View (cartoon, helix red, strand yellow):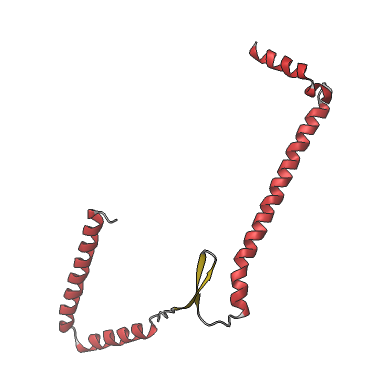
Length: 143
């Protein structure tokens, strides 16, 4: 939804553009013939070089389950078009695999660090599973 100031600004810009175009059109009658011919030639060159936009309409609708896709263009796609459509999918899969490998490596390093701390500690590992030791630790925290 546009606000009043945005609508006012667009209206002002439109009026300014129309006024400027009218002034330029009025002053073209006062130009010498050689300048007007050069402007005409430049305008023709600009029109010749303009980009022609080709609009394509969908030639069909493919529906599969709850999804629908539009089919645009001819049915015989080139190998480059098909390859170009699979490159983003391939990049996504490679990225997800890389993330999985990095996360797995971090998790393995964390487990290894805990194991090193357990084995290097003065207490035997069986002490950590003793219920009395857990009670002892919780009792020391309250003091």
